[in-house]
Image 1 (spheres, rainbow, N blue to C red):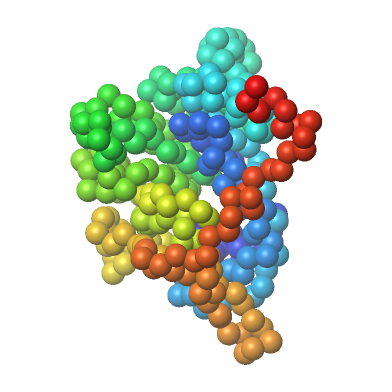
Image 2 (cartoon, helix red, strand yellow; image 1 turned 90 degrees about the vertical axis):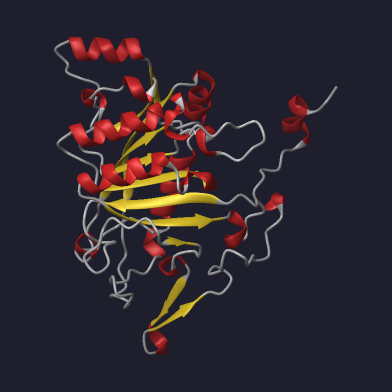
Length: 303
């Protein structure tokens, strides 16, 4: 889902998106958002009833991104992956908040800060950001052999609880939230707490269990995804707090093509619309890996 609503798109204007990336790691969420925005110009919009609208050329861009991550090494890599990103430490932020210059909300630009999510203050949050993305720690919900699955009692859930607290406290809330976690997150106490938080703050949502193999990526890794919007967009029959309709197919709007020359018909691309049990022909890893020349590869070879 391109996370754009119909009233914005119908105007066909140049809309930018501000983003906050919690638990940012090396920037996977930002990479995905930038990729989605870059392909919007070729994406055909549909009304909520899936009827094709006029073919619009959207010009969305990422206006700002404030990333938060506790790992120094991850943040160093993040800054290398996104050369426009300024690495800001907690001391610099504290100085800003105590100086006349104001608080840590950039309101524009790109930064990554080494900070625990639990330590964030509402003044740290960019109030103009329309999109929040988060991939909270998965260890409390994972099925690996050594995992204890403590669910909401695990201290590693404190970060997600802090995001919930921030969402409830700030006045200017995001329009969209994208959350990702392991399959074991489904049915957890923590997910129920998250449902309750979203409902209180006026969000509706859709949920997915998807694997990269469903879109031809050679990585069998089923993950849980939630798309939430601060509206009634995903409500059905007046019910917006559903938690029992998890989809296992790539959303139709992501794999449909519009053919005006064929009576405005909508044609689904079978290679991109698969069930959870189906897989399309995966592209080889060489399709995704940057090819290094002999001189470039030398530092990485075994002696």
